[in-house]
Image 1: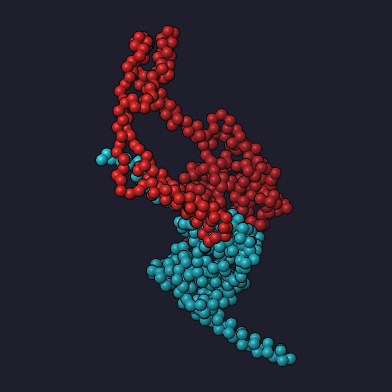
Image 2: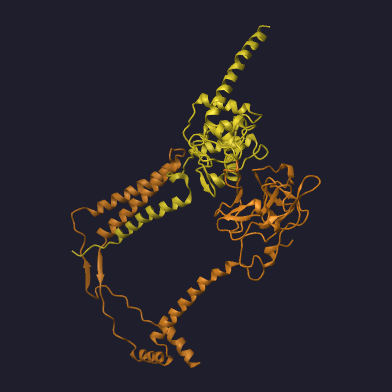
Length: 250
Length: 331
């Protein structure tokens, strides 16, 4: 009986607390997101006009996707990487300084999650993954764009960002979302266990043990070759010239 | 005939019968000795110390090698070996420049010995017509001609000239199922949007160029297939050869826009030279060095829901060459 009462009291306290988060989130949504994503996350459709932060007064069509059903996962990813709020619509979202504070992000994530049924924020366990599996999976699925130690790269129409600042959760989220022009991977393509391995590899790749010493940005054979040619070859030629100098007749 | 013989004789004379300089006996001629390096420091001592340092570093290498698990093990190994070689080189330089006597010798040409024979050879050369000028020009011509041939030879790589039939062969025919890397047949309902899949012809050698496909699903309203490829999709699923038509790399990148009005269009991208193909319009080239469209395979869904080929590719598979469009793909 006592326990029941305790649970009831806790529930009474918890519900308004959760609500408070959602209400605050709704306010923030009105402030930062509604211009592009539309009222109640319905998406802003063609013909509607939008004036949002950082944008000029021109009318833009189809500004942002609807957010119903994207779940806490997408909101958490876009807000905690600083991808959103977007400074200028129509540009690729890039990692940037966070505009919102931690509690504000929590509230906004709660609000977006309340808009419809969607995936929760994943909790990857890199310690359960295997580094070698992770390397193999990363090479197969990710390295084509993100480079083999996740230094990032360019492709036609977009930038594959470096993953130096990506947290474990963000990596797991991005795999499921496929932000911007990245393909997305379902649990059938990459199981949670495989994601654990990939996360473990990406975390390792932030500070790979450079057996050779000087990493030269981990960019691979081209800069390494340049260093060899411009530094080592110059030194060797200089030494050869010195050696070949004859003693002058006195 | 005799002219050719004379030519051969004179060439052989030129190559083999040239007289070598006789070796100089000691004390035969005057020796001009470059004076020794100025005294003032003990070159011997310097060289000895350098050699000892080299030996110490080499032993250091062995020690570091034996002591596994040192921090920066590789770097220490490199440093020890590098310093050892550097000290050895420095010691050798000191030795060569300061310690070894350095002399310049001079000698006159010796007297001619077989005057009569030499005159005869000169006569043969003159009769053969093999003048100095002609020989030089001939050698120059040989060098130039061979170099030109060498420069032209890579043109053979522009494409096969004789046995072209095998380049048009593919393992695909109507009804061939699409399987994944584990030979599991692909089902149409497994193919999701914004994701891409590698598929192979069932029962075919996966290593062969025309076996591999890249499969993506597009919304039907996104599809804009040209008349030649009309109906190649199976409920929005399209399949292309995974081999880039530029240099034959595997198409390993899929540009899958999350939000299309603002993001770039879907595209299949080759990581080698960034050739970019539009999967919604039959694989047309939208960017990069590829010279022709990506080869498309018509698909159908069988009653059990498996993906099957509905025929062969629309164009020959693989990197392009001069005759790539001479024939269509065959089974």
